[in-house]
Length: 499
Image: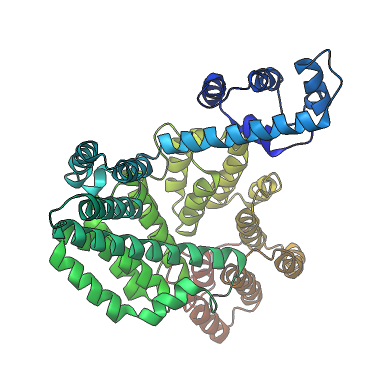
C-alpha cells in the first residue's frame, strides 16, 4: 500500500489513541462495518505501518477475505470509510481537548433546539467557570477566550430574542459586541507578530499584506481611541488588550527602542495578568520586536538574556517534564558568549543539557564547549570542536562562521581567515533563507576582523581611531569581542607579549 493519508494518520496515533480508536470503531453509533474493525487490527499489528511492505492493499485484502479474489472497488471503499472515520476520530479528540469550542457548540445546539432550561444551566456553568476567574487561570489563549465568550453572549441574546417574550438582555447585547471587538483586535495584533517573523525567515515583503495594511490604514490614534472606550467598560480587559497593542505597535511602525521598551515595561508590569500560553506568546513577540532594532542603539544580547530569564522564572523557556528545544539552548549560549559571560555558559549548560533531546544533545554540547574553549583562550582546540558540529539549521552555520573568524584571528592565521572569508560569499548566496540583517551582521564581523588583522601589523594611531569608531558605532554591546580586540590594539596602551 502506498504511503496514504490513512496510513499516515494511523501511524501518528499514540498507543493510547490507538486503543481509543479501536473502541471508537467498535461503537455501532460510529461504525457498523465489522470489516473495518478487522482491517484496523491488521494494520495495527504490523509495526512501522508507513513503510512495511505487508501493508499493500492486496495483502490486507487476503487477510480480510482469505477466500475471495481481490476486488479493487470494495477495497477502495473500505479505505475511504476508514479514512473518514479516522478523520472524525481525530476531530472528536481535538474537540475533547478544546473545552471552549465544545462550550460554544453545546450552547448553540441547545439554543437551536429551544432547550431553555438546559441552556440556562449550561450558560450559568460557563459564566461561573470563566467569567469570575482571572485570565491567568485560563488553559488556552485570551483571543480564543474572547471569541468563545462573544459567541456565547450572542447565542444567549438571540435565544432570548427568538424564544422569549421579554426584552432581550442589553447587558448580553453589549458584552457580545465588546468581546467580538476584543477577539478581533487580539487576533490582528498577534498576526502582526507572526507576519513579521515569517517575513524575516523567508524574506517576504509586506507591501501587499492585508493585515499590515489594514492596521496602518486604521492607524494608532483610532485604535487607541477604541482602547480608551474599553478602559471605561473594563479595566482588566483594557490592561490585557493594551499590552498586546503595545506589542503590535512596536512591530507595525519603524523599529524604535522607545516602543520596544514601552512594550517590555507594560508586559513586565502586567505579566501576572496572563496565562502561561499568552505570556509565552508575548515574550516571544518581545524577542521579535527586539530583533528589528539596530544593534548600535541597544544591547540586544543583554536584552535577550533578560527576556529568556523571565521565561525561565515562569517555567516557559523549558516546560516542566518537557525537552528544551535545541535552538533555544544554542541561542541562550550564543547570547552569553557575545556578553563574554563564560561562567554563565557553564552554569546554563550544566543545568539544561540534560533537558535536550538525546539525538540533538551532542551537537549543542560541542557548541557550548567551543564557546568555553574560546573563553579559556584555547583556540586550536576550539577549531577542532567546530569541525565536529553538524549544521542542523541555518543559525548554527552562522554561529560557526563567527567563531572560526575569531579563532583564526586569535591564532594570527591570516591565510585560514582569508580562505574562510572567500567562502563567505558563496555561503551567503546559497543560504537564501538567512535574512538580510543576519547576513550583514556576519559580513561586518568578517570585515572588521580583516581590519583588525591589518591594524595588528601596522599599529597606526589614526587607523586605530577610525576602526574603533566604526566598530563601536555598530554595537551597543560593550562586551563585544570586536570592541575588546580593537582596544587591545590601542597604540597608546602597554602592549601585551605575543603568544
